[in-house]
Image (tube, rainbow, N blue to C red; front, side):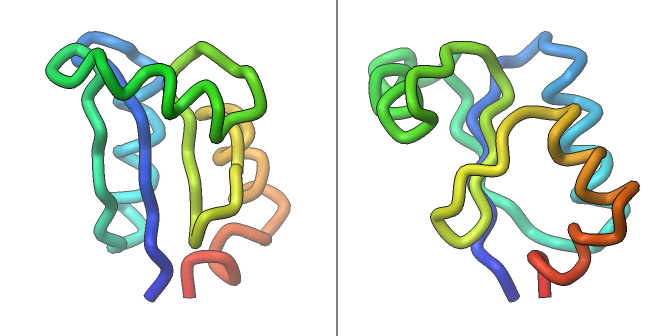
Length: 84
């Protein structure tokens, strides 16, 4: 099973949509909530190549992008292979 990390905030609707998709896929993920751990925002920005928005999603250390990027991978049939 792939290791999934998602940087999020509590009220972000895109974060909710991304987590819902991962839950529907039946995969576990580590959520780093930047509202609760604001000191980790710089870590996220560095790992995400300068992106500051949430969510930022990583699968096995590979930066996937945000919610739209995750859904695009699913629509293109590529997400299941990354999650396996």
